[in-house]
Length: 214
DNA sequence: ATCACGCAATAGTACGGCCC
DNA sequence: GGGCCGTACTATTGCGTGAT
Image 1 (tube, rainbow, N blue to C red):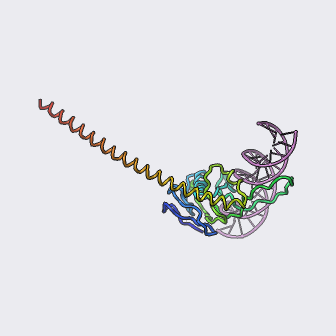
Image 2 (image 1 turned 90 degrees about the horizontal axis):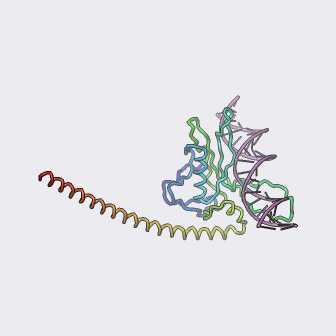
Image 3 (image 1 turned 135 degrees about the vertical axis):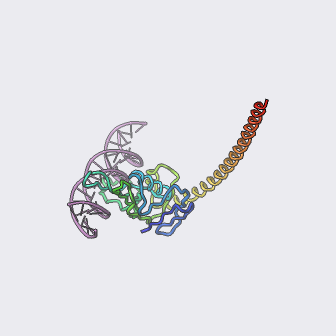
């Protein structure tokens, strides 16, 4: 079980079971789950794991849950990678139709969160390793990403997305630099305005004191 | 008895493809 | 283009099993 939180480093290379580079952690705000991690609500856990998945290149799927025997409320929830498990075989009703792309690859990655007596949701299990390459998708259309990839397309798609990711990183670094310059200018301007205000206040006080003397 | 978890089944839904 | 059908998805539930 891997229980190390990852958010300590602003840039951390994550590796999956096949040892390939997958994605880089670029924001401290996306926390890697760890056993014992607490959430205010079930929804917060979902949002967090979903953000983590988006950041590191997989799609979260809400899996099983359990209700309390006493009050019937949900007290246990499992969140998995969308490639978790294998698709169940169902007989094809039409031979003319093309089968859809395979989306399940037997991935074991998941987190399990449980509601404690305190009302907080705590991660009780975290499986980090995926059995497939992780791809940071540039689109918000999750379903389109899921269904558009056949096994043959995947390597090409991974290369394209990796190249795009590098381009976007360079672009964001340039934007960051520009923002830093703007902030610096704003600070300088702000301190300039402060000095002006101080001068004005000082002048006003001098004028006031002269009036009192007269 | 209760909890934790795995697995299968099912309902509802979204979407792609085919046919008119 | 629009309707229908098939496929695959998520969400939920039931049941079984092992641990506490």
